Length: 341
Image 1 (tube, rainbow, N blue to C red):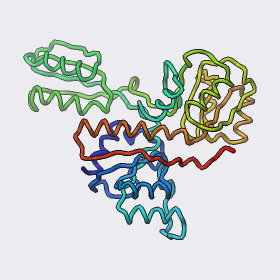
Image 2 (cartoon, helix red, strand yellow):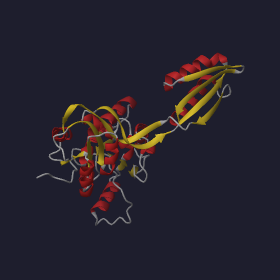
Image 3 (cartoon, rainbow, N blue to C red):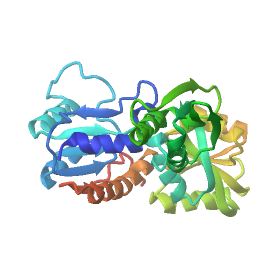
Image 4 (spheres, helix red, strand yellow):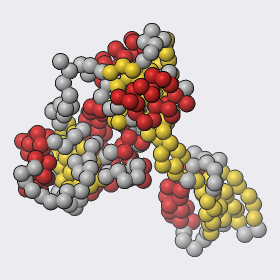
């Protein structure tokens, strides 16, 4: 199969419009029209991961973290990072990175982390891309009105307003802008190109808000200290950093944001979080967190390796549904640069 087929299906799940500004998400190295037979799923693209891909015969690496955060000014192979680029190209391995779009996607990175913590009543934390809403107004012949109403209700699960006109029947429904093309195509298939008319009006309210991070409630209250120990177990880490003036406080409202999320602690606190779980907290930011009275648990950036089994499971599901000639394997390497001693 072509790499572009997997990429297109993934970008239905986590569209590129969800990525944050200037984030180098998407194709990193290679030709999307390349034939692929095996995909290696990884958190990071490091020299040892590239060697692993070569060893298992993978012709595509699907990573969470981009291999190229900054443009290369040359390809001097004396530098390990650039030598890695050369090895990737020499072995015709395509590299794709799903970064902040996967972080914001529904059912993506931050939902996986929230599930690992067994959070309940989960909602988004830091607002990101907002899919706007539109009002679709449709006029069709009376004889086809029932089919059109059934189509709009079944496909979009939305409230449909219906009016009788001298020229036929008119329907009005609020849709996400992303769903508009599918609605127009479906109705055209029912009534034909020339037998209906429609208008689209942008709406200032409604739509769908995507977010980075998640906030929810623990199944039952526990102390900050015990929750920190639960995080160690949930994320399979040998150590973590606890930032708290009150480790014995009973807490239940928890926010989580994978990666480097220290700058969003105030957002978590404003939404009622008693504890915020994120990685890469800076020293002075830690002081600010203590002064603000919020407890923070830093289990490290590498907890995002939860993406390896989750993406592997997702790709295998799509492979079965689409009968792709493709095998998918998760990297067996630990790319966490830190060791607790």
